[in-house]
Amino acid sequence: MATFLEGVGAIGVACTLVMLVPAVALVLVARKARLTVALFYVIGAALLTWARAAGHWDVELTGTAVPVATVLAAGVFVIAYLAKGPLSLSATGAGVVAGALAGWLWQPCVGPKLGEILNNTGTEAARTLGLMLVYMLGALLPALLLAILPHALPATKRFLDRLPVAAVGGAVGAAYAITLATGRYDDLVGELYRIATNA
Image (cartoon, rainbow, N blue to C red; front, side):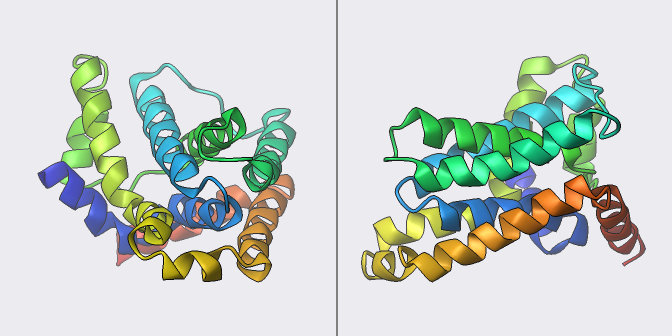
C-alpha cells in the first residue's frame, strides 16, 4: 500500500507529469476503449521503467531512436482513436506501446519506495516488477479514474465522447510527438526534473 501511495503522491510532482499528461490525453482520444488503453498504458510504463532500471533496456533517445519515438508517439494516438472497442488489439497495442514509450522516456522522481524498487531490480526481478506496477497504478491514477468515469457515472460518457474532447487529447498527442521530433523532449524532462528535485 505504501508503494501505491507514494505513486499517488508523485502525481503532483512535475517530472511525473511527462508520463501522466500523455496518458490522460490518450484516454481522451480512445473514446471506444478508454479503460483498456489506460490499463495497458500502466502495464507498458511499468515494464519499460523496470526494464531500464534492471539494465534490460538501455536505448537512449538519440539518432535513429528519435524518429522511431516520434512515429510511435503519433501513431498510438491515431490507433487509440481508431480502436473499435475495448477488446480490440488496437486498443491493447496502443496502450502498451504508449506506456512503454513513456516508461522509456521517463526520468523517475525517486521517493524511498521507488528508489528501493529501482535499486533491487537486478536481484529481485519478479518482486520489483510487481511493485513497479503498483507504483504506476498510483502515479497514473488520474488517467485510470478518467477511463473509469463513464462506467461509474454514465452521464459523463456523452460529454467524454464528444469530438472536441478527443481533439484536445489529439492536440496534446501532437505536441508530444512534435516535442520528440524537434529534440526538445529531453530539455522539457530535464527542466521538470530540475524543478521537482529543487522544490
